[in-house]
Every structure is written in structure tokens, then in C-alpha cells.
Image 1 (cartoon, rainbow, N blue to C red):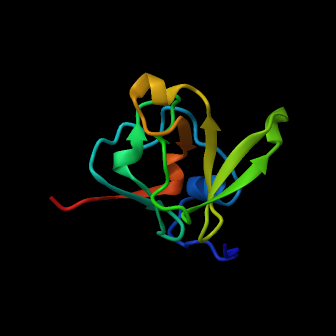
Image 2: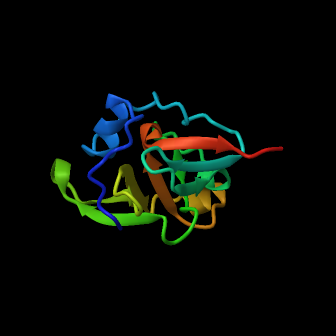
Image 3: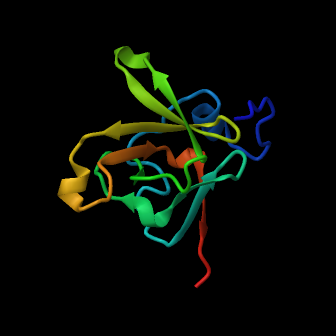
Length: 134
């Protein structure tokens, strides 16, 4: 992973709050929460591909949820002990931008028939979506 000191000048203050400062957007406010279009989700900072829409699912958590990254090198996983609990933070492996957190063992594989029982809970502000040409 490269540590990027220069952030994309086109990012909004809200995006910088999430990507750089490891903030979180309010639940149920993200522009990609209900997106059903087919395409690829990229890092809003460095434009690296992160998720395919084919791995997105409705979890009811208030943020876009995915069960897998687009490729094994897309994400960096970090132990996060903030908020008095231990979670797994996910960041863009290219620029280090904060995306959200990963949760395992919640029952999604059995409940929805997903290939894995994993939920990547991702802030819309950290993403950029490009619709696949029909």
C-alpha cells in the first residue's frame, strides 16, 4: 500500500472526513445505499476498483453492503479498537483511504444464500460508481 499525503483535490469536505479522517456518514444517507445499477465501485480518492455491483446486497444496516472485494489486492484490513470494541477496518489498498468496516458471522450466507458470511459495510462517500455500458 502506498501512503498518500496528497488527497484528490476534487473530494468534498465530507469525503475527506470519511476517507482521510476515518469518519462515518450518517446511516441511510449515502447515495449508493439503494443503487441497483450494474457496474463497478471505485475509491473516490484514487479511483482504484474496489467492488463489483454483483457482490452488493441489502443488509438493512444503513450503508452499502458487499460480500467480497473485486480482487484480493483491492483492500487493506486493519484492526480497529476505537469505540470500545474490536472491529476490522477496510481501506483502499492503493491510497489508504478509509472505506468502512467488515463484519463476519452474521448469518448472511444462510439468510440470503450468499457465497460468504461477510458484510463489508462501506460509506458511500468513499466510493465512486461507474455504470457498466449496456
